Length: 257
Image 1 (tube, one colour):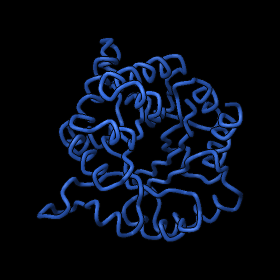
Image 2 (cartoon, rainbow, N blue to C red):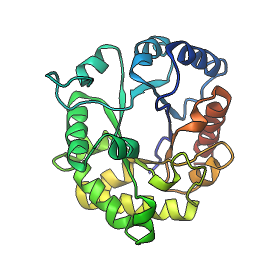
Image 3 (cartoon, rainbow, N blue to C red):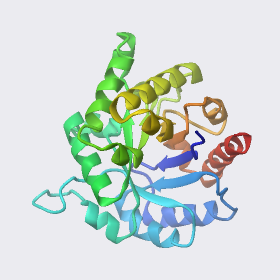
């Protein structure tokens, strides 16, 4: 089955509103290939500006986190209705930095995924092992648990609404990317795990990205693997030229299929 590649930027805690506007103008100075799904996941304060700028383009705008409740006494949190009102379509859920620094658990990931799909948002659900878990040869065990728990209680149709991102924690922001062989093996295993939960059709259709020190120089090797459908990109997404190069490489994969 042909799956449309998706390249998503995760800006983390970078860019002011002005910097985000400048990035968008520069990035849009050249046409965006229509065979690639392009997403910018930005800090909350940048989202209203970016969704306005993106209105007449094919670029999707995403948040980096969300609360699963529609409203309530949750100081500092942002709800799905708040995001939807300004036109946000995507949300990253379960990023390793959220798990490590902000007490995100498999349970809260599941609550957020369920709330997002019920509201019509597209979750980018992150899974991945730490270096210690990898050293103990627990990679498959860890990602299998994370995938099962993230999708607990979801129908096959709701699972189809999601994008998965395999991000080995030890490769994020370190400059040390996984090899395509290792990443491909884990992502193929994730696809098999999806099949046990939602069936073969869901497993064949769902997009699974790789994330972890992805850059223009190495993305083509990852996209050459038949199970890898794009990338969730940190540092290399912060400059327009670099991010445009990543999108161009994904478009080449589309041309080859």
